[in-house]
Image (cartoon, rainbow over all chains, first blue to last red; front, side, top):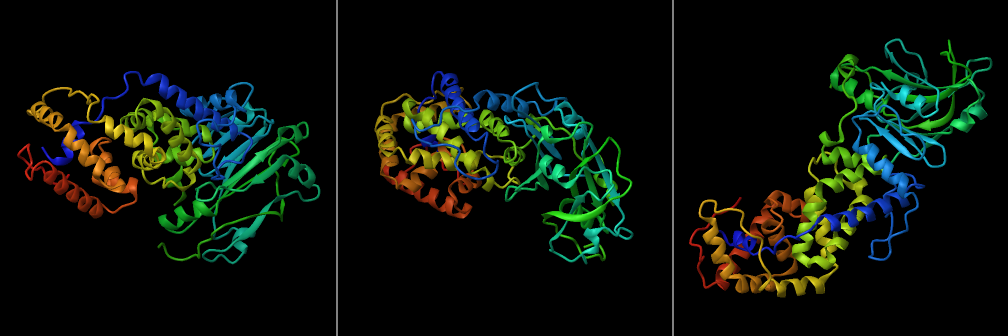
Length: 262
Length: 204
């Protein structure tokens, strides 16, 4: 027996009944999760004091418990549970209903937005979710027009042209609020949706505009970094025939220089 | 080139996600972190119980996962197993309870050991020998530097590999091996200059 193994042999016996202790510790964690309910996620700040008597009282304990259950049931994201806070999460997107009535949409991969439209609809947000693959050789929109180079920032977003299918800018800005993307994550964009600000009959449009690359690796990088999910509010349930582009928000992009596959 | 991405992803059961994936998701959906708790809380609890006794084990588990939750933004999602990371945090939380830790080391000379499940390869007899050496081993443990003791117990009690221990403590694997060899030498000397079990097993 190795000396190290000898120490293993004198390890104290485990607790006879670990369940209650674990459950109490779990409740503490849920309380802390609940205490972060009103805070932007990914802030990296401590959710609560860590001392034995310094945990915050549960603010959204019920909501946190529901959210925990929702994550544990990721495989069944049919609809959000009725009422209260909750979330649906897939590898490509997430929808979270917040206690204040807003809905937070997280987009990570515009190649796979299937189910997002249904999830939003089930949460009271009428939406059209589409992905448009655009050939970079022919696309003339603002992203490619910005002289694509490695590591640059461009800006662009849907903005209602006069007489277009979009709701006016004040409506857009009241309905969709972009949230700062947590640092260090692969999240493409994070938005808060305010369903109560949507005019009757209007539809939320989320369009993933995909700019292709040349070669698998180039395509992969472009897909992650230059995809362009842009929530906008349509005046009705129809896609706009055309629109103009103006800046209402800035999105960081990294466009790859065109060239042979790297 | 775009077609390769079609249908690439879809709803994935939380149970099938790696710790890294869950922690990454928890940045946008904090509730996902509860799955990490459910996976690893028992193990951290057993370790905390062994290190500090029953009174503080619950505190350490709660503090460990709360600290982990608040630091989840720094976790590398490419690491599929969060155990080393969690143990590293737990070690720091345990370190905040030095008096209790010292008391537990004193009790180690008399508290009952984890029972052997079965006699595999004659190990039961070796365990009996180790039990007989318990006071001297406990004395060695108490005499180690804090850093060496943390490393030894992560390997011996938590069952972490050298690489996992290195990750938990922010060391290199070679540093882990070097320290453990130093501990072996010290232990052997404390036990009379020879391995009472008769066999050295070498590195993992």
